[in-house]
Image 1 (cartoon, helix red, strand yellow):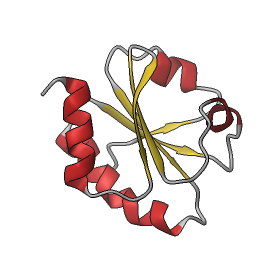
Image 2: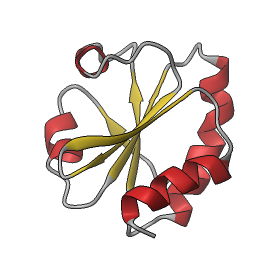
Image 3: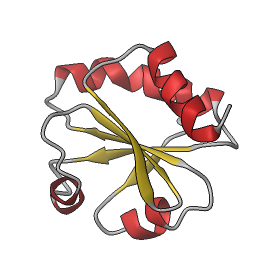
Length: 109
């Protein structure tokens, strides 16, 4: 069972920017090899941080507006938002431990 939400240009404002909890957005595309490698890591992080952090995927091919607005150059890119603001950006494939450290910084853990 997936713990990840699906974000789009249409629901980004409501689901991410207006979220009362911090949100990590995984910007990815079907054709992107590193994105597919990162996917199980993101799923594990979603499970590990359930109740503290909302985690979701954002398909850049289907939704071009938000990635352009945030200057997403390469994928995979993870953005962490808190109170509607981008507070952390992780570009490229990273280990689960490395991403968890970034999450802990945001959560104050």
